[in-house]
Structures are given as C-alpha cells and as structure tokens.
Amino acid sequence: MVKRYIILILLACSVLYTKAQVSCFAQTQIDRSSVYAQQPFRVTITVLTATWYTAPLDFDNIQIPNAFIMPFFRTVPGMFPYKGKQYAGLQFYYIVFPYKEGRYTLPSINIVAETPAVGDYKPQKVTIKTQAISYIVKPIPKNFSGDNWFVAKDVSISEAWDKPLKRLKVGDVINRTITIDAKGTLPQFIPDLKTDSLPWCGVYPKQANLADTRDEYDANGERTQTITYLLEKEGDFTIPQTTIQWFNPNSGHIYKRSTPLAKIHIAPNPNLGILKTLQDSLRAKEPIKATINVKKGPRLIYGIAWYYFTLYSLAALCILYFIIDVLVRIIKKIRAHYQAYLLSERYWFGKFSRSSLKHPQLLNNLYAWWDRFPVLNKRSSIQKEARENQLDNIDQDMTAYYKHQYADDNSGADIGEDLKKDIKKYRNKILHSDHSAVNKSIGINQTEWEK
Image 1: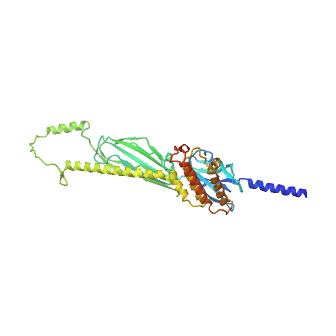
Image 2: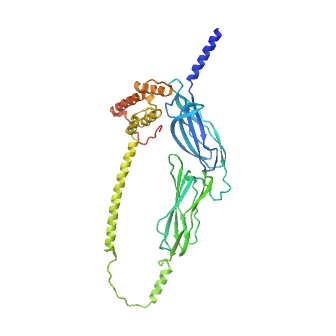
Image 3: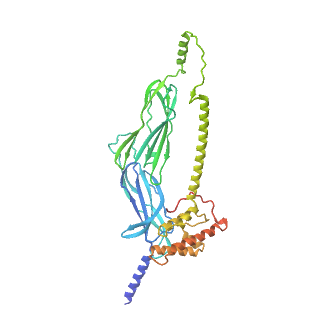
C-alpha cells in the first residue's frame, strides 16, 4: 500500500514538473536546396512557443562560407500549426548569395527567447539551437556561352550621352554613361562592361559606381559607368553596342539585352594643324571681288527681334524655375512632416488606442508605440517596466490579457479596454510630469520590434 502511494506521488511530481517546462523550439527552412552560383535562396527561421513572448529574440550573427548574406532581422509575429496544435511564433529570414560551387552546410545558430511555461505567467529565458541544413551550389550550365556568369531575375541596360551625336568634329570629346539595373541580385555581381579600343578614337573608361538598391523584400543592384571617347579621325563610324547577358533562375533561361548602335559622322576640324594653313593659302590665291554692303535688320522670331525673344525666353524660364523650385520645397516639407508624423510616438499611440482587442493586433500596436515612447532607462518589456515602477494596474491588465488569450480564461471581456485606459493614464502621467524623465534624444528613425 505504501509503495502504491509513493508511485502516485512520484507521478504527480512528474506531471507538475512537466507542466513547468517551457515549450519553445525553432524551425529552419530553405526555399531550395540546390542552386547555381550567385543564385539566392531564402532561409526562414520560426521560433515557436506554447504560450507567448515577453521580449524580442536575441540571436547570433550568421556566417556562411563562400557566400554573401543579406539579413532581414525584423521579426514577424503569427500563429503557426505544429503537430495538430497552434503555437505563437516569431519569424525572420535572410537571403544567401553563394558565389562558389560545392556542397555546403548551413550552420546552426543560438537564439535566446523569453517566454513563460505552460500554465504560468512568469517569463523564463531559454536558449534554442537551430538545425543545420545542407545545400548544393551547382556549376555553371554548359549552354552558357558568355564571358561572365551572372544570375538575376531581370536586368535593364540604358545609356546617355552628355551631348547630341551631331555636328561632331575631330578633337571633340563625348561622354557615354551606361547604367545596368539588376533585380534579385547584389551590385557586386554585376559584371564589368567591355570597353574595347577603337581605331578612330581614344577610349577612356572611368571607375564604375555600384549602388545597393535593395527593397524591403529582395536584393537589387545598380552599376553605372562612364566612358570618354576622344574623336581622332574624320569619317563615318559606328559606336559598338554594350551587351549584358544573365541567367534567370525562375525561368531557367539565358537572356541578353544591349544598348543601341550609335552611328556618328566626324567632320574635319579646320583649326587643327595644317588644315587651317591650307585653307589660308587657297583663299589668298582667289581674285578679289567687289562687295556691296547690304544692311539687314535683325532676325525675327514670331515677329520679335531674336535678342528680345531670347531675353523674354530666359526671363520666362527663370520664373518657371523659381515656381517649380518653390513647389518642390513645399512638397518636400509636407512629405517630411508627414513622414515624421508616421514615425512619431503620438501617431503610434493613436493607432494603439484605436486598435482591435484581438490578439496579436493589440500587442503589436502596443509594443510599436512602446518602442517610440521616450522614457529614460526603459525596459523592452512593458510588463517588466510596470513591475519595476510598481504600476500594478498595468501589470495585472497584461497578466489577465495573456491568460485570456492563451490559457482559455474567458473571464473579463473588457480586459483589453482596461489595458488601453491604464496605458493612457500612465502616458499622460509621464508626459505631464518632470521632463527629466523623458528621453528627448530618442530619434524618430527607430525600428519596430514587431509590425
């Protein structure tokens, strides 16, 4: 009988111990396991918990051999299914650009999360290790015949000249600017332009400029290069095309785009060397002819003397430039004020005040405002801030809200409204108290914890 009681006690302790454990783990996924050199692939890491998070994730730096990494460390919250259950999760990703063929392994990293155990509300700090994943970087396809292997989703090429390609003469200098805009790749991968020498002119390429034009979701790059041509011979010539060739990983095809051919005529320059001497000699042998001076009036444009027309045109252009400049300044100021307002604490508090009471919208907007609220020595967790400053009403509201959302506690239908009211009182108290408690140095360019 005593033995049976001991077994029951041990089983009860085991159950209690199991309930006190934190159920938190990570999932790592890649969108493809086999790529070509320079072809990017996406690595997504999702950290799941059976309860909720009380602080942002803290993870190690990611290092991968023979590859460039473009991280997107903004965590995105959500609910994710796993083995028939729903888990609260934070998800982030990064894009890997391998540049050398071979077999590689995506290394595991450590992630530190703060989350309560099931049935509890006190957060615990846990360290999670992601799994290592293998991938293959394939060699260049045999059907690629170009000089430089280049992978991109789409590429555009354009050129611009600093002067019209008309009425050119020997000794003139023209500049050609070529811009390559590539989608889905890094600017370091855009190949150099060919600048072959030409027998009728000197070719002098300048240093190329690389620009990283990535957006919120993908990598993009731009390469701009200027080539100077010194015209040395007269005649009709053709400036060759500049061609860019790339492999599109989405379609599996090779594409090519080129600049148009430019045909020019280079006239002789009478001011160069012997040409002027010969012209003077021929003119000296011509007979002298009597000439009659005929006085002509000024050339008229729309019935107005050309110099008055030029003066009026310049004045109109100046006025138009002034009007456009004023309008541009006004638009920039309005846009700057609006952008500043969208990043301000007042805007995000209004968004929280109007937020839905559903999870996770309410918490997302609450922490988005909290990230911008200018308080000295502010904690990343609102609940920690409330406990340390003895704000029991906010602490109790947060605890009740978490229980209501995660522990199937149906009591208190107005918990979210109570939380909004108490947060509003706390904000008004801080903003109208001693200004030394406000950190005015917090910039408007802070990033959000969640969005």
